[in-house]
Image (cartoon, rainbow, N blue to C red; front, side, top):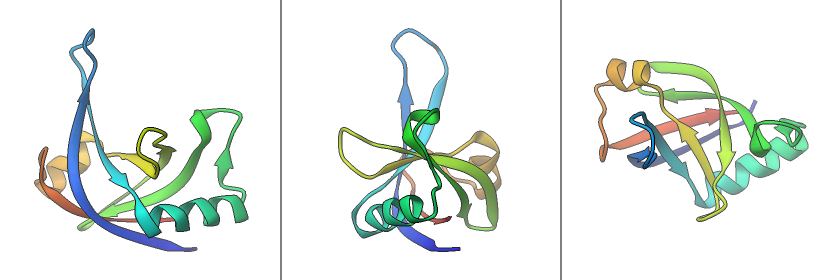
Amino acid sequence: MEDFSVTTPLWRWQSTTAPAAWFFVTISGEAADGIRLAAIGGQWLDGRRGFGSAKVLATIGDTSWSTSVFPYKERGGWLLPVKAAVRKAEGIAEGDEVTVTVSL
C-alpha cells in the first residue's frame, strides 16, 4: 500500500439547481502524480465507471474511510469528497486547511 499526504483547504461545491452541497479537497502536485502512478500500476483505476476514479482509503485526523478520488480535469490532480460524518468528527469546515492521507 502506498500513502500520499497533502495539506489543502476544504472547499464546497453547490449546484445552481439543487440545494445540496458537496465538500472536497483537491490533491495536486507530487501527491497527485504519485496517486496516478500507483493507481495505474496497481490497476486501481476504473475507467468503465466512476469517471476514471481510483479507490482509496482516506484519513483526516483520527478518521479513516473508504472512498474514491476523481480526476480533476480543470486543474489537474484529484478530487477527494469529504462526507459530513468526517467533517463533523474532525471539526472541520469550508476553508479550513486539512491534512489528508490517501492510501492505495
